[in-house]
Image 1 (tube, helix red, strand yellow):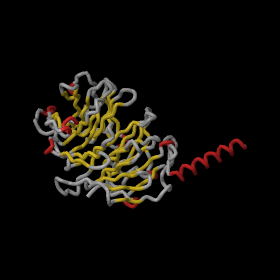
Image 2 (cartoon, rainbow, N blue to C red):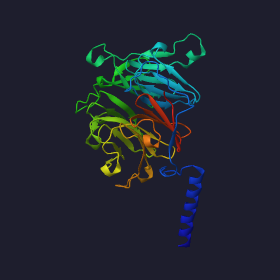
Image 3 (cartoon, rainbow, N blue to C red):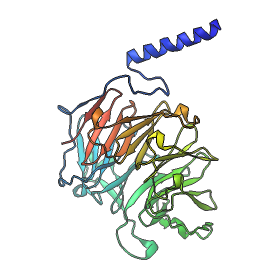
Image 4 (tube, rainbow, N blue to C red):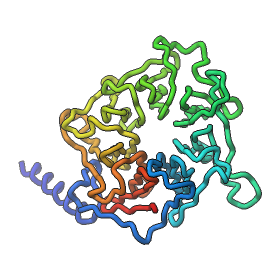
Length: 365
């Protein structure tokens, strides 16, 4: 009994020390540690150069291995943030389209952009002023339907073998660095449900080597095990926008109308309405260094989930941050966690907020 009491005392003292130092214990909720506020003045800004469309958004984000942050927008091209200033790249710089739906860094540290008109890869050598073009473009026309129409690229993945997968409005394509081919043209694929894999918002290769495709075309989450293509409807929702495999191998799905669902390898775990994220669209997810999951939603700001309680069914472990806490907009399309643990939120109206655990700092006009 005495030993048990000493253990409790140690835990209390560690928790108290952690709170006082402003640091979080792994799995600890940040709610209640500090009252959030926002900073808007004196910060570098994302400056709009293409228009003032209030429905444009910061749709995706990435921190590259060099430490630069990249943000793709719908209408304003892409922004690179080096910690001091934002540099804007648009069609005038060689970007194939000013709508940027996804950003990806490959194994050779090249930055790829999925746009409203095919794929672009950033040429870092062009920044040295040697006359090279800033972007290499890989057009992806709608060859599945034998047309030359523009094809929007929503997702990019480089698999363990080095090959690329592109999720587009009109199907999934594979690229080996030389040739581009529609995935479903492979006659060896067993596709009993005749899935078309259109409007693929995310692609994931899990720890077991399965490929998952998030469909915005009522096909749900589609899994390819190397032979067979099957699909699931997480939370009975056929529209899936985001996927994430956490450190424990659980796969999370962000859906259009039913919030989040997690697959533990055997069972789909649905969160109840009491857990707040049930009836909302989840656009993006990211895992922090402690293994906690962050969600970007269409109307209710961002959410934080204490992953240590994943298997405790019915336990409410969500914490919500909105404009009342300093977030610049409650419609959030992307969530990116940098190496320092800051949470970057890309929002509607080309807004960008950074949360450091205490304060929201806003970087927009």
